[in-house]
Length: 108
Image (cartoon, rainbow, N blue to C red):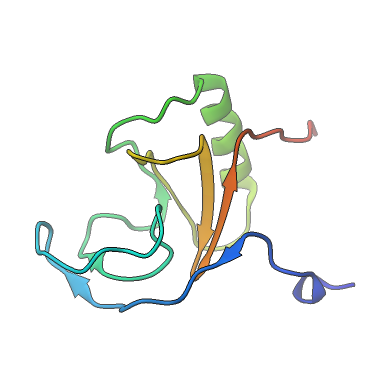
């Protein structure tokens, strides 16, 4: 079975607008937290690991494990803290959201 044949994980979220907006510009509410599509602030969040925003209550050891997995994963990706998240960890892709209570990474 190839990677493309495997079922997608997480909840499917309807795709919203894809307009770029200026920081502070108002827009309708996102339909998920964290957002999986919708209005994007120009220049604020490109691919990579970001340290801006209020830290979530996640132990630093978990953050380090997530960073290691992030750095070993294929493709364009972004990682950042998120305030008002209702779970410790959320993984998103365009139109998909997987909420997790914990992260356990296999030792290599």
